[in-house]
Amino acid sequence: MAEPEDVAAGMGALIPGGGALSMAMAAMDKSMGAKAMAEVTRSADRLVESAKSGGFRVTKEGADPIIKVLEEFIERAGRLSGELDVFNQEMELGNHDYGKLVSREMWKAANDERSARAALRSLRIILEKSREALLRASGQYQEQEDQAEDTFRGMGD
Image (cartoon, rainbow, N blue to C red; front, side, top):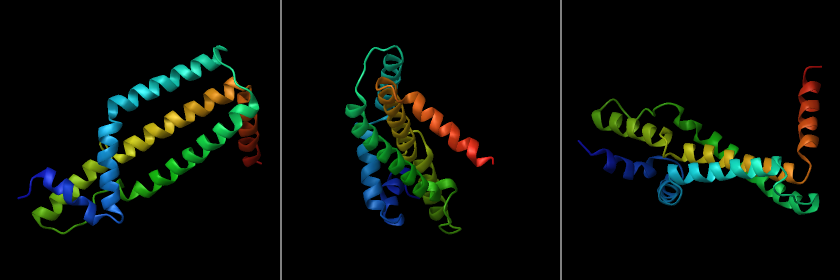
């Protein structure tokens, strides 16, 4: 029976575009492991708190292009997360031991705290907090909150 590490290494061939996905997951694990992502998230929290307290300010004109880029990346992260929904359940790879092992290891790799899904979730939180900090620092936060509230209020009509 194959070792789980061997199975995980071979998973890329079973996933559409999986070679690239496997390489990206390995790169993220090395460069942005759970500890690094947690620290970046804490930094984003501190940035929001600083903006709330007036610790930094930026003009609307200075913030808007950055906010636009952050929003584009937030949307991309959401789309990528949706593409990984294929891993919501274990894949059917046969009723033999190897197929079951590969399926189980693929599901674990796709759903644990070191997975691409977890990294995307963390990245999205960091991007959203960064956007919030810029909105607050540029005085646009309440305006955006009001627009969102109006949108939801209009949905109930």
